Image (cartoon, rainbow, N blue to C red; front, side, top):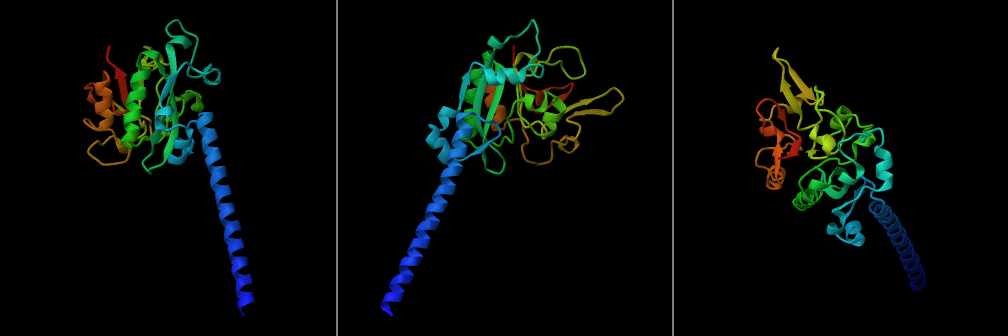
Length: 252
């Protein structure tokens, strides 16, 4: 009876070895995919702590650089329009990591004015360390620079050459000096003269009641608020004539 037992044991060990190899291969493929996302900086991709460690650690993922050609090409006719106020040299490409509400790590990016690039790197590095939830951070060009579309998707962004909503005046987003965070859950609200409300995004009515608790909500005094204030930004949630809870802009 001993020989059949030995043969069975050998078969089982071989099967376990094959399974372990297959699992390592699956894990390796997944890690390779994540590393490629970091190397190519694919905003929106989900990555693991292991991939970040192999890539060089979290600090290597929080940087500000001149705008790469790939990004610049994608901005043309969308977030960037030929204008006399701001040029490519005035802008920077900021790369960060961020946690979402479900404890997943994502690759994020935004274009901003060079005047605030280093400040944003510091802010988002601290938000990441604290696991402050930001759902999505891709360039508005993904949405063809349609602000309503990106806000409905709860996107976080900065530069977009456009006027202030409902006016012909340039927004601070047009200069890359304003950031919108978790835009669906922190809407823009203005009460018209007839008493009706103008809300952006239009599907954010449920999040206008700031007494309610819900995910991705920015409040006066929370970490996001404190970090932006410390770096010289004002919060649209503090404004009196209207409320723009997603909006932080550089105080000038």
